[in-house]
Length: 348
Image (cartoon, rainbow, N blue to C red):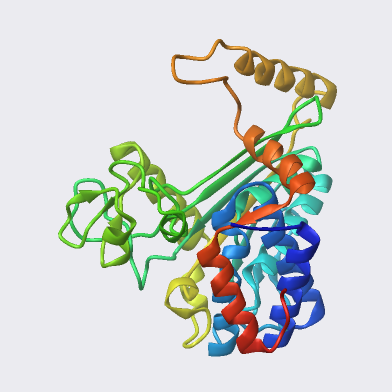
C-alpha cells in the first residue's frame, strides 16, 4: 500500500492530464474532483480513474480543451452541452447554474448532455447543500450501447449502474449526502475489490451464464451487475434512466467517436431547491438537525458499533485522510506509474 497526500495526488492528476493534452483549467477541475473523492474514502471515483481519462483523451473520446455551454434556458431551467470535455467540468458547471437559478426562483432543473464520466454524484449534491439547498442528481444512458445490468427477473442486460445523488443541509453545519448506484455495487467497485483481493457482497453480480457470484472475476470475465433491492431497486434504476437519459434528451446529442460507447448517449438531470422555500431556514435547519441526531442516537443493533446518517462516514474519512494521507493499493499505484512513464512525467 502506498500513502500519498492530497497535494501530491493533485499534482499527479494535473501533470498527467496536461501531458495528455488538457488545458490547465480542465486539469485543475478534474484534479479537484478525483482528489476530493479519494479524500472522502470513495476510492472507486477517485484517483483510480486517472489512467482511463488519459486513455479517453488519447483516443479522442474526451476533448480535453473544450468547455461547457448553455444550449437553452429560461428562468428556472437549462440544458447544458459539455462539448465532450471532461464530465467533471460539465457537471460542476451544471450544478453552479442550477444553484444560481434556484437562488433567484426557489427551484431549478438543469440537464447536461455531451458529457463523459462525471465522477462522484455526491460532490454535486454537496455543492447544493453547502449553499442552503436540497440537491438531487440523476445520471443515466450509460447502458444504451454497452448494457451491464440485468433487470429484475431477466437474463440479459439492458441498463447500467444508473447512480442517484441527493444532498440536504443540516443545522449543525453537516450535510446528509446520499450517493449510490442502483446496482448492488458501483461499476468501478469491481476492479477495486479485485485490487484489494476482496470478495464482492453476496448477490451483487452474475457470471456470463447468469449465476450469482461474489467473485470480481465473474463480472470481469463477461458477467453483469444486479439491481439492489430486487424489484424495488430495479424500479428506481428505471426512474433514473427516465430522469437522466430520456428527460435530458441525451440520445439526440450522440456523436460518433465522442464520449465512447458508454457516455455517448448519457444524460444527467440536476435539481436544486431552496431549503427555506416553505419556512425560515432556521426552522428547517433545526428540524433537520434534530432528525439527524435522533437517528445517530439510536442504540446500535448486534454487530454494529453505531448508527450514522448518509455522509457521516465520508466526512470522517475526509478528516482522517487529510491528516494521515490517502492509501493507494499497490496494483493501482503500478498502473499509475506505467501511465506516468508513458506520458514522460515523474510521479515519485
